[in-house]
Length: 95
Image 1 (tube, rainbow, N blue to C red):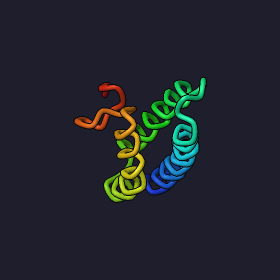
Image 2: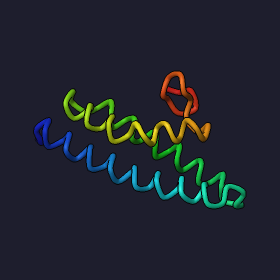
Image 3: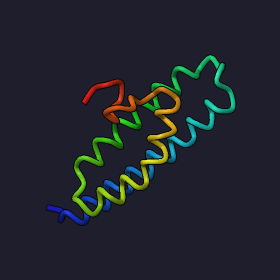
């Protein structure tokens, strides 16, 4: 069974990968918000964000701090895009 540090490293790698996807989709939305596929991009961003949040909750304390630092900038961009609820940091108000 993998140790906590190894699992945390894998989860942080997953978070980084998801952040790349979020960046790509936010860029698409910023370039062409009226595109016919914009709603699809928004849904995918919400799904990626849910996955990041799940990974963050499963990290150990030190790794969680690192993950939060990586994710915080994108969380704020998503909140600004009204894709993430500001008050509870959960997607669509669901926990």
